[in-house]
Image (cartoon, rainbow, N blue to C red; front, top):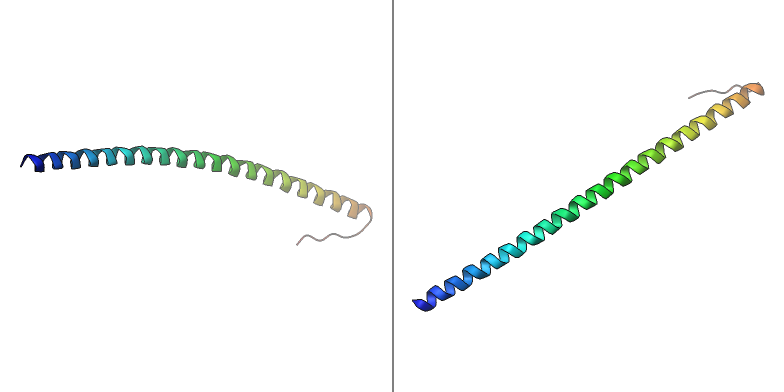
Length: 79
């Protein structure tokens, strides 16, 4: 009976150790996920900013083309 009790205590200690290791692993994975999410958000914000700048540049070029076309008396049609 003493042997069974010792085996049971060993099993309990091993289970607690395993649970503790898993909790540490889960905590580390959560930190990695949060960091990845922050990085993604920054990249997304940067891409949106670049997109807006490019769109403004294209619109400006379109306006310039329309002005040049009107000086040359070439009709320009918007679609």
